[in-house]
Length: 385
Ligand code: FES
Ligand SMILES: [Fe+2]
View 1 (cartoon, protein in one colour):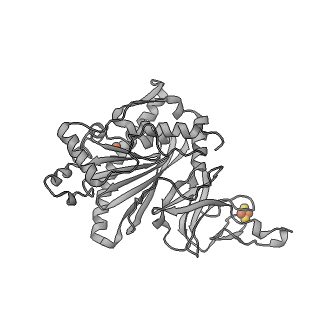
View 2: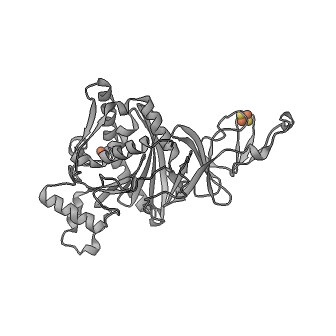
View 3: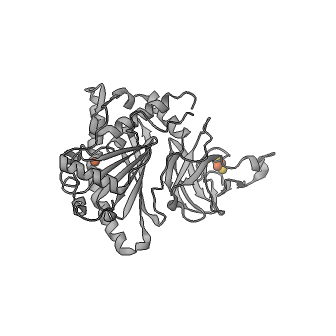
């Protein structure tokens, strides 16, 4: 597959700005009542949220690429595993006794039943149907009453492998590589500090198309209207710094507490507690930074109007229990804002069905969304993935 490393829509930067530069730009915007703007607005046809063919193409794209499955620290010990669907396909991702993380199609090689569900730690996966068992390396270990399967070649009937790698503190899977045999994920900065560990994970379903849900994270134009009593009192309405890196974007949402940095030496200008960075890892992952913690959110399309999000909360556990308490409190606050987002997203889904709009228009302040659709369109149109 042809890789798009830089888009026309990009403003030319290949690398992310430093905190210092982002903060200086935010001060400029505060002083001038401005925000970052894209070069043009984007009109996304409504049919792209409603067409089964389009969703199928998007799912095929998700299966074809390296996509984030979970943070590395979710599977810390040998035998730790997560079993869940990715792009509609049941997978198991497990850390083996050799420390390597492997991914498999979660389907027994007898008659296809899932051999693991949810998450846990094990040295063996036993199929609940007839008891075939598999090691964490996927090998078929035992078959009850094996004499009923004359000629069964155990070495060819292990769980079916899926490409899997760890990079930048994240575990990626690729189900169907096609022509793309790349061994690493391009354009991936180290987003997760080494000391950060997953301290909470949860899944949530949303009655809306996955792209409507994603879009709500990629602009600050809705802060005042949607988050009147949550984010608006502590942030700014429609004040963001938007950057592109590779196919991905980063949007900086400042807190009003950033004002305290004025007059301080630039060496003190840290984003922690002053800016929430939202990284959109194309196509379906959002990583957000909050004071002393971060969230990794994997967005899983379940159908045209149904989406599941998997959220992983990470923090620096070396800092001890007090930080953890503050982090959970902060997360409760963020969760209130997330409910407000979910409400407008589900409402937008109903609005799509009303037939009022032939297209959804994303303005100059919503340029990260226009960019997302630009990349998605181009990637989907690449033949033979
Ligand atoms: S389907 Fe798994 S043992 Fe029969
Ligand atoms: Fe929001």
